[in-house]
Length: 144
Image (cartoon, rainbow, N blue to C red; front, top):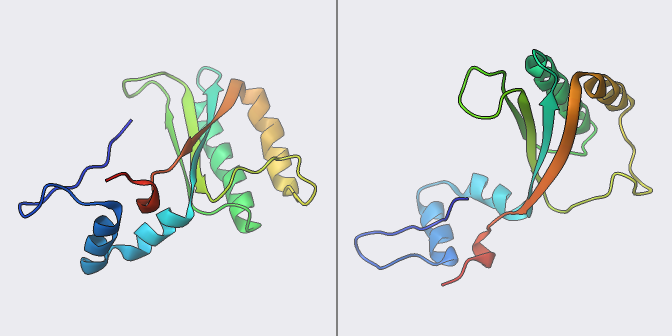
């Protein structure tokens, strides 16, 4: 877990509003404004069967692309460990941010058909998967 702390030589620390003002001065407001809209960080984690992590990562990426193309998801990233780096082997993570947590079973949810095909293939290449939700720290949530 990371903590956000900004300090300069002229003051003890910045508040969230000071941080936003500073980022505006140095031209970082576009990315920061995007982060302000996103309230949650979401991770879908897959435990791939041995030797399948690259294939699972590719399919997870393709599934996220279908949601992105349908306007149901913004920017996302996929990372994986086939055993070539320290950490848990055969783990694939698809992550994104969103303004709200939404049930997949909601009435107006139009799941892209290509995503369903990809999901079926993912299930044959994985032992398990789970989802993690975390609330993002935004300037209005910072404490002084």
